[in-house]
Amino acid sequence: MTVSMTTEARVLFERRGPVAWVTINRPEAHNAMTFQMWDRLASICEEVGADPDLRVLVITGAGEKAFVSGTDISEFRTFTDPQQALDYEARIDDVYTRIETLAKPVIAAIRGYAVGGGAGMAICCDMRYCTPESRFGIPIARTLGNCLSTNVYARLIDLIGPARTKDMIFTARLFSADQALELGLVNEIVDGNQLEERVMEVANQIAGHAPITIEVTKAAVRYISQHRRPKRNEELILRAYMSEDFQEGVQAFLAKRKPEWKGR
Image 1: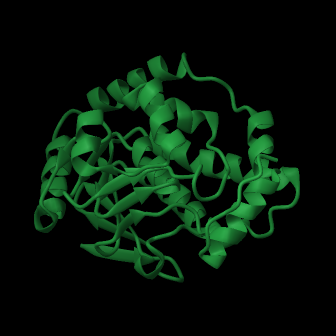
Image 2: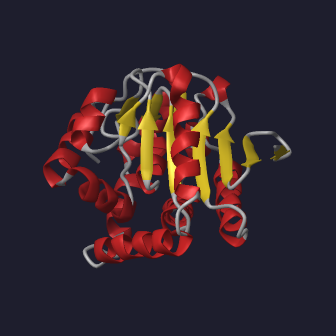
């Protein structure tokens, strides 16, 4: 097994035979993603897609507390221009799309919290395995007051339906592993000490099957879903990110206080 790392060792990339194993390695910050980490993940998708010896990609988070907790909120402090909001959503949407459109299966191995952008990352994967302690949600209505891209909303609707998508966003609550399984957010719940072994077992099983069958099946499912998917709605993105409420949400989050929403 060989291991290569980014300069800051924040995104680890391992080759485990036909399986590419990526670990988001920032456990002291609940694996929150910097912009550079998002970019590195995108480049890894390109590397895996171009390597015929790699058949499956696994994404996981370091430590026991979180899979990925989303984008590092400090990255939002400079958001004052409309183009910054549009560029951010386009940037993250590009990474999600690279995961979703990778010609090879992508599996999320989830420990702890998969929230915000981390939940968005997980739902881009083809399969999701979690531990009993895992929690899922996108609590932006309670924390930041921003929004998701229409592609993320569409992926959520594909997985759990429109009513449950609204429930998740409107209530800002976190779903337990059992609830996530019932909703169809995850494929299987696995004991924490067996998660890596179980995911590798599934990954190696898939890697031994006909790669073209898997590739075209993934593409066909995506094709059917995308025919119902709207274009990116920039007006909605700007309505959220350029609001006073979003600025208040970011400041309150960083100050560890409850935001005071004004609806403007």
